Amino acid sequence: MTSPDRPSIFRKESLDRLSSPERLDRLMQVVTPRAWVGLLGLGLLITGAGVWSILGRLPQRVSATGVLLNDSQIVDLQSPIDGQIMQLNIREGDCLVGAPTATRGANGALVATIDPSDLKQQRQQQGIKLAKLQADHQAATTLETQRMALETRNLEQARSQLEARLRDAQALNPELRDRSNVATAEQRKSLRQQIEDVRKTGPILKERWERRRFLLEKGAITQDVVLGAQQEYQRNQQEIARLEAQLKTLDVSETETEQRYLNTFATIANIEAQLRSLESQMTQLQQQMLTAQSARETELLAVTQAIQQLEKQVADNSRILTPHTGCVTEMKVALGQVVGKGSPLARIQLEDPNSRLEALSYFPLSDGKQIQPGMSVQVVPSPVKRERFGAIMGEVTAVSSLPSSRDAIARRVGNDQLADLLVKNGPPLEVRIALQKEPKNTTGYAWTSSQGPQTLPMTSGMMTTSWITLESRPPITFVMPILRQQFGLE
Image 1 (tube, rainbow, N blue to C red):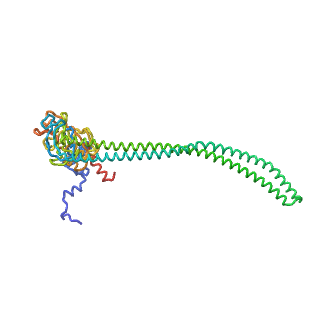
Image 2: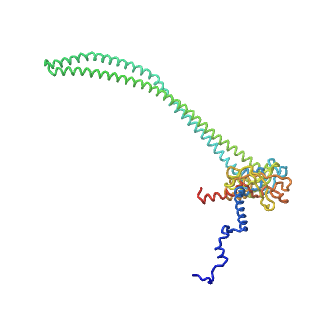
Image 3: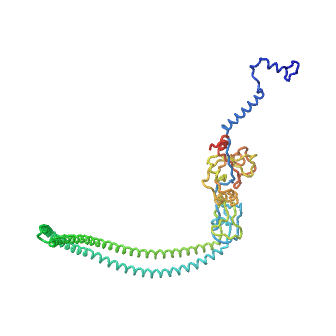
C-alpha cells in the first residue's frame, strides 16, 4: 500500500490535469501560426514553379561562326597560259580600277607577265606532230584506196555468184514443182484403180473361203484346200493394205514436194538478203573510209589551229590581263612560280555599287537543318563586345540544302585559310543572313541593345558569330523526356 507521505515522481498539476475531465474536447496545437506562413510560402513557390514550367518559355538557340561579305561576285583570276611568272603587278588588298592608266591594256589591267618558253616548246612539238600527221594521212589514204579496190572486187564476185543462184532458183522451182505434181497425180490414179480392182475380188475370195470351210465340215474336201482359199483371201486384203499405204506415201511425197517448193522460196529470200548484205557491206566500207579520212583531217585541222593559237599567245608576249574591276582578296601565286593554264593567280571581289553587306554563317549539319528562312538572327562581329554593344539584328534569307565543301566555301568567301577554319568540324550548311538597316546609327545597322560601336565600320571579311533562336519551349518539355525514360514509359 502506498504511503501518503511518500514523494511522487509526477508533478501535482499534471496529476490534477489527468484526473480532471475538463478541456478534454479541445484540439491539441501541433503547428504554430509562424509555421503556417512558411508552409504557405513553400506552397506558393511550388505552385509558381509548376505554372512557370507549363506557361513559361525557354529559348533553344544555336550559334555558328561566319563572315561578313558583300554579295558581289568573287572570281578567280586565272592564267591563260603555262609558264614562269616573271613580274607581278598586284598584291592582296590592291583594287583594280576601271579608269585607263599606264599599265592598262586594251583587254584590262596588266597584272603579270610570263616567260613563254613553254609555249615555244609546245609550238615546236606541235610542228613535229603536224608533219607526222601529214605523212601518216598520205600513207593511210593510199592503203585505204588499195583496200577499197580489193574489197569492191571481192564483193562484186560474190554478188555475181548470188545473182546466178537466184536466177536458177527462180526459174527451176516452179517447173520442178509442176512436174512432181503431175507424176504424183498419175501414180495416185493408178493406185486407186488397182485398189478398186483388188477390192472387187475380195468378196469373191471370201465367199470361196467360206464355202470350202462348209465343205470341210461335211467332209467333202481336205483341210489344205480350205487353207489355200484362206491364204488367197488374206493375200487379197494385204494387197489392198499395201496399195493404200503407197497411196498415203504419195500424199507424204506431195507434201514434201510442196515443202521443197516453199524452201526454195526461203532460199531465194536468203539469197536476196545476202545481196542486200553485200550492198550494206559496200556502203559500210565506203563509210569507214570516209570516217577515217575525216578523223585524220580533223586531227590535222586541230593541230594546225593549235599551232596558230600558240603563235598568237607567243606574239602577245604572255601578258596576263584582267578586265575585272574590283579588289584582290587573296593572292594564289608568288614571283618566280611556275603556273599552268587555268591556274588561279588571285581572287578578286568585283566592284558592284548595288552590293550589300550580308552575313554568311556556317552551321553544323544537325543545327542547320532546323533553320528556316525568315528566322530572326543576332550577328556579333568578332571585334565587337556583345556585353557592351549587343548584336546586329538580321533575318535568315536562305539555307543551303546540302553541306558546303571546303572548295565551295573558299570560292564563296574568297580565302582558303578562312575556308579551312569554317570546315574544321566537318562540312557545314551555309546560312545567308540579311542585316537590318538603321541609317541613324554610325554603322548603318540596327543593334539589339545600343547604337553599336561608333568608330568601328562593318566591312567585308569581318568574322562573326551568329545566334539563332530555333524555338521557345515550356520548361516542363525539357524534363518530361527524362521522366519518361526513368519510369520506362518510352
